[in-house]
Amino acid sequence: MYILGMESSCDETSASVVEMGEGVRRICSNVVASQIDVHRLYGGVVPEIASRAHIEAVSRITREALDGAGITLKDLGAIAVTTHPGLIGALLVGVNFAKSLAFANDIPLISVNHIHGHIAAAYLTDPTLEPPFLAVVVSGGHTCLYLVEDHTTFTLLGGTRDDAAGEAFDKVGREIGLPYPGGAAMDKLATEGDPKAYKLPSCAITSDEIAFSFSGLKTAALNLLNTAKQKGEEIDRANLAASLTASVVDGIVKKTGLALSTTAASAKTLVLAGGVAANSHLRAALADLAKKRRIPFVVPERGLCGDNGAMIAAAGYYDYLAGHRADTSLNASALDDED
Ligand code: KG4
Ligand code: ZN
Image (cartoon, rainbow, N blue to C red; front, top):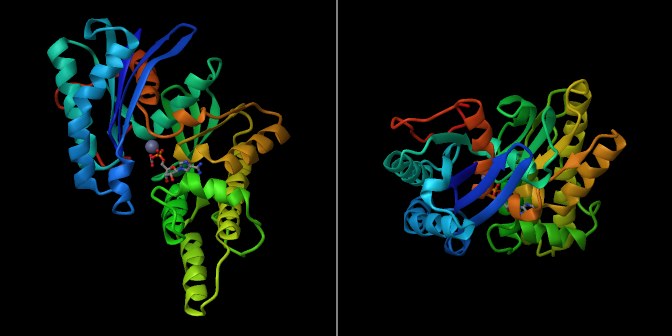
């Protein structure tokens, strides 16, 4: 069946048509209207500007997604939309648009959790991937580990107690003069630096819990920059990027290793997803961990790591199969407070 996936939780408006079925997982179109150039002027996402930009783009990109797939609304089996978590004003644009489109055309409507959407991107990358598996979701807003028991049952094993990994990359990146969002540029810069040059705290909580803290790591990196500035000293940007990346990657690998050990009986595959899953150092380190544990490793191609409608459509398909349906009372939520 054809599913229209709609995503507007942050700074990307996206609509995609995906064909899903027995042995079929195919992206027919995936249109992403990025607002990065607008938010870059402010060094971060401005929620009010994001909502307005979503409103301007949503009709056009939905039309482009349908045309790109060569289908019409009549061919759609369902419309899936991100309802939470995210920026509330931004989410409401997608939710209200999808709701109107679904009810005006008598198409089933499905509510999708953004984080579950990121995980579902892996189904599109590996057509043979099936739960149960361990999913590591690392993005600008989230850093968490889930045991995915079946397509719609997610057990949260642990996550960050404060900031997300992507935020640490973006904030430190901004301080060293990288354009917003700094994650991708930090990735490149880190390749040229020495990861042992600066001593930074680990993002892994020092207990047996599966938990992270990125706020201390971010502050330590910013303090290093401020102290050097006050002393009139130069910080080597590549060395700082490499040291920060090493702290993030080592901490995530450590807690993923712990999660794999505690879920060994059920988690037979390791999945990495979310915007930061595009990071080459994290991809390589988790691939290595999976190899050592002799389990397959699946990570979406880079184009499907960031926010996109295709992942929402893929997640929505499994919610559809599970019988989940939304009605006209469907609302958005900023928090990750529902399934
Ligand atoms: O998943 P996403 O598009 O949005 C959220 O749901 O948060 O993730 C965006 C985050 C940003 O923090 C961005 O800097 C980061 O993903 N990112 C990267 C890379 N590419 C994007 N971080 C590290 N290395 C990358 N190559
Ligand atoms: Zn995201």
